Image 1 (cartoon, helix red, strand yellow):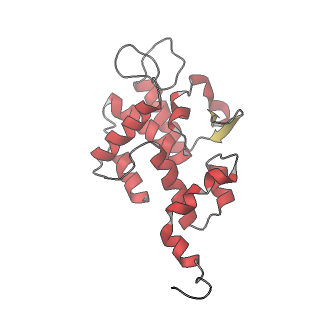
Image 2 (cartoon, rainbow, N blue to C red):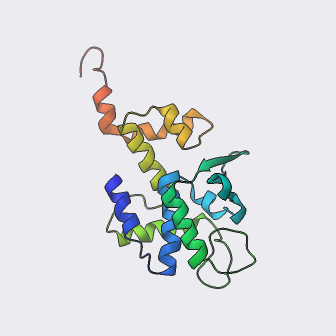
Image 3 (cartoon, rainbow, N blue to C red):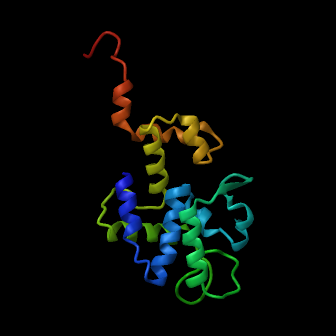
Length: 185
């Protein structure tokens, strides 16, 4: 739920180095619906400061540019100025312990999500980074967005990839379900 996303973001200790880094990552997940792998592979040159855009190298062959919301940009700037160590890696997000390099895999981002959910006191069946994509899609569906609109935001090439989000919102599905021909048996 939106209030739970807010609680997760507020649970980040932004007075600590790790909290500032994790806050920027969580904002990218929740506001831009990025995948964990997209965050792991993001590089410094993927931030297009002049146009306030982020170059996302997603699952598809093509790169996509996304606008950077102000709060996301601020969190990235804070991370870059106050937290990110000087190192040879061009990856945007760097581990907090030596060796100083980018994350090894998307598991690292999923661990940040899991720990942040626990810190916020939120217990869900799913605890990975994809939870934020599902949350955004489900909230869009509840708000009246159609599958094509949701697919565009999630950057899906195939509409079938978006259909999984229809299954999630059973409450909304019940409101449009038609009675079975011939009645219930």
